[in-house]
Length: 472
Image (cartoon, rainbow, N blue to C red):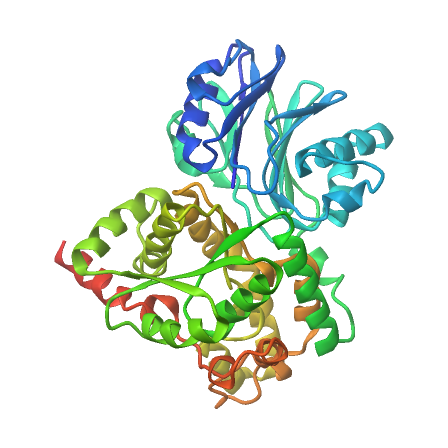
């Protein structure tokens, strides 16, 4: 989990003050090193107070959190300077002949070589076609700033303008601190061009394009193979990791798969003392042979976490708080225990028809409508779920990894027809492919066949949140 930011003057004046404000607001996302690239060159520092921010009409900035490698950014290769947030897991495969210190170097070299051939649009499209990972990437090229997001939209990116500058950043709250009052999210799979003339978003490769790449045929073997490959890529270079855990099939499968690859895996669950998630997590953790950290939440603690969560989200939403508060509580404990990488089962319910509303859609409109609802749910993940989860873990300088929405696995998952994910309107289990996958990994039947319980209800937090804010 890092942060990126860029700012461009509308009048050709220095933007050093705005760049300093943006990076200062984003330091919690990457507290290990800081850097800028500008018309005056690139500067980096491990100490924020020592960072040189030159007088320049445009500046690209970065705050670093290292998880599998350490390289101060922006990275400059040729005439391109690159900064990014997230991970490109297959970066070694992009240039097998090269040995890189981190994926940032591979990204910079890829863009340089692609830009020598054709346009910026071509270079970014080629990158999206080949890269596996979740990312928001920004680069400085020929006096202009560019930024783009992965096609699923796992990592956030926001942009906007005021009377004097155009800017983008990993969080909307950072932009608000330089008087950009209504930041907009850059859509997944889109490229943002920033120059003195303004901000220009362009679609490169979005979910509709991704849909065309889904295989015509499906199989459990292909699904299991890609899940194993995804876990191997996402655990590469790690010696320990935390898992946001509820004892449900999704988090249990992720925990089992990750612990098969690395030894230092620990589980974290948060809820009220009587919550279903904690009681079930206590039963499942011994089956996995993994240490379980239980974070008990009372009304006073929930109220404190609620205000922190609202600040991180920059908006109020009871349901988002009901989910975000347990995540924030877990991320506090995860950071205290010295972890940097956090795994989650996010996305499984959307892509495998896990929610009860899929049964309602099936009852009223049939399987074709369920298929449409699955794609619609996937298209909305970036705007609520990913943004919320990112905000909760980045508050503690952690990086979230979400195997269920990794590109290649997602293709195989979406190849399964709706009728194999939910059998009938009365199907209480639903998401049968992921349950079969859990069985392949040796999870006990009482885990693989546990019915879905939404996090905000399983944790016991939602009722308390509703009561607290009804009082006010």
